[in-house]
Length: 412
Image (cartoon, rainbow, N blue to C red):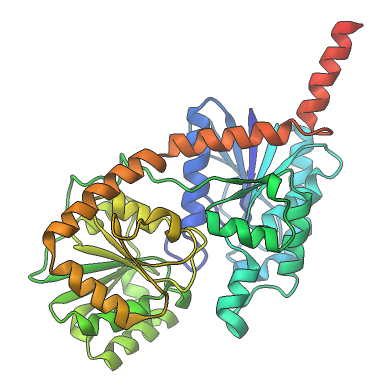
């Protein structure tokens, strides 16, 4: 198959750790590569956000990244991109018309808006992955939600118009049905993890003389890192290392890093909290292996790749019982799940696990087995391929018309 992916703000070429660069970038890059390994030709379309970017770039064998021209060639926060979607859609339409793919897979809601607009007269089916839903964001962030006001309405439109929808976890299915998505058009396909890269064996970051907790992710409030800092008050013999955000030299100018530093001061744990900034993807396994526990306490989480990376390295997870973590982390088997925004409960759970080395080892082994069994990218790519085939078989799709045309030619 020829697969077109649209990921308007999350380029698979991006450096991870920024406010708008995280799990979606990793997902798109890894899924595209895994589909290419299965013999498909994949082109990822993303917005040009730097003048020096070429029109086309090779990500890996079988995967090309093409940059769409829409607005100034500079970084723009994703919540400010909506006015540029028509220009993205027009550039995308032109490129798809010149070389029609079997299917278009849109990642994030604005990519879906652009993809559906671009394919309207081309007869190419669109598969949609939202990665995050506006209804959930609004519920948890309230007035702090910076999404465009039209987001939820647009997501309903995309959900109804897409040939298929990929939900990343079972919790998302109910949210999709609530906004009007047809249940029969939804496939639950999780993200994956490269368990050849994230392994229990290999280099480790320098050890400390006390237990180490590790939090990984973008420095944004909903990730709940302040709750992990507060939980540290209940664990006097542990330190918390926070990996993510800008480079270490720029942390003192990052508003969220400054807020978290102040949170540590108020909690009286400044000497046991270390913000280390962005960690290159290649070095992340070493950081995870050096930790006794990985702490993931988001308010909500559409999927969450970090728990998978931790489990692949054999490190137990203490996480919030929300979103994708409800599927990936098995409470009492690969880690502990807790209600979100309850740092005292998190502190007690962390202290209990740190005091029980045998249980940590059991959870670590179970995590390795679970990732290998369910979250290998080859398995994810196979499920995605089957979703594409279902989408392409719909009446009116380009593939269907092509097959019908060939049958008519053979009959004639």
